[in-house]
Image: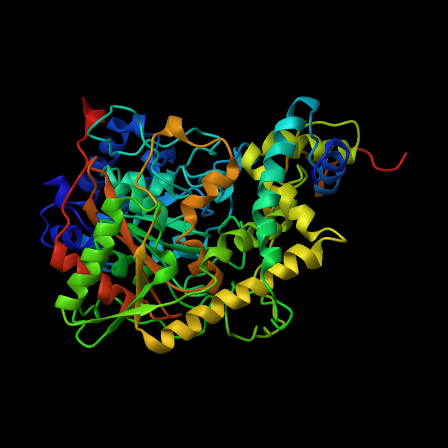
Length: 491
Length: 95
């Protein structure tokens, strides 16, 4: 029964009084308790969630609902500031931080009556692709390979958000995506992960990593649920000057899986001998399926694809070094005593940040420093311009682009490469989308020979989320992917 | 080798992160690996390309100059590691 829960199905159960919000919330809190080994949650809002659920049940009784989804509990990445609830960004430096304000996205969820079960583990300051950089330890992927009992990474940085949905520790969750942090973990856990266009969702109140790339989005079980949650969280926000004034659409209401006459691009630069055969097979099959369903498949070229990752690893650290300058031990967060003010800053930051965050701050400081600014930072911004032009040209020819989401399926936690650059390659297919500011979605397509989910990515032009969701829905309807992980943690 | 011990310590100073001696070797190895990776961009010709800092084709709007939030000192100081009256307390700066 549980496995079939979606935002859509729960809304119906609540509407027909088959279940109350309090019962539902208790059920998920029990799942969270039983699934502690997965390490998905940094903070569990047990009491608050139950109180909020009771209030929702009251609203339902008095026919005063905030939305159809009033009373459904979800999980929130620990990167969204939540009033009165600890918000750590999975970092030691923020481990005691309790915001006295609410991010716009989580406020929007509250306005729709959604209930927060708690804050989901992630890579520290959203920097990572395995969830291993979290101060609170790795999240375990609910999936396991048929050949081994070893724990697998859930992907990152929204690893807790993806693993929690996959393992039924929430029905849907909020994540953020700076270079693939929603789509890559969705791909590793057999869930649907949507990164909206830059500007579609407000960044206000989200712990900033790289401001020109960060975007919040949903991780869900179905494309319909992604549309529902996007409807709830998106829209213009005057508190975020980069939030778009483009009117938002009714994504769920307007879902239409008819793709007849659409053109779907297959970029040749994403092809690689290193791609696992099963991923290549899924990609080819999916293209054929879209063709059968009435779309035209077009070979396209995105010539600067391979330059995106190095450009990203200049731009994102540069912005991070600037954004993370605020953690100085003066106004909030950790303070480590020093002999003087500078010593206090240096000790606080050295103890408060983990290794990957320090690496990125140092690289970012370097590429912005006098003498290297033009050679690195400006150069990367020029490459970004070329990447954006690639997509502008491509979308003159096609409606959507289909690629694999990741260059591999989930791997063992113990096998994470020690060289940071090897880890960065996890995001090779997702990073260009952030640099160009486009919407992208990862949907589960099939399982590989080890029974691990393979995700495929769709990309459309800026603010064409509707088209993106429509094509994703078409694929979902056709393949009917219904694999779920065996709940080994309950044994 | 771009990052040796001396340049790394200078970078640490700029970023206000103290780096202990036992971390220097690994850190320089990691940072050099990242630098080598991003250095591949030097091969790309970009003389005729304008840089972009943002993907959004939207002019930043000017907001009306009106008060819409009342941030009280109490709220702002709520998470301060050390405070006194309405002030953040930091180690002494002037002798």
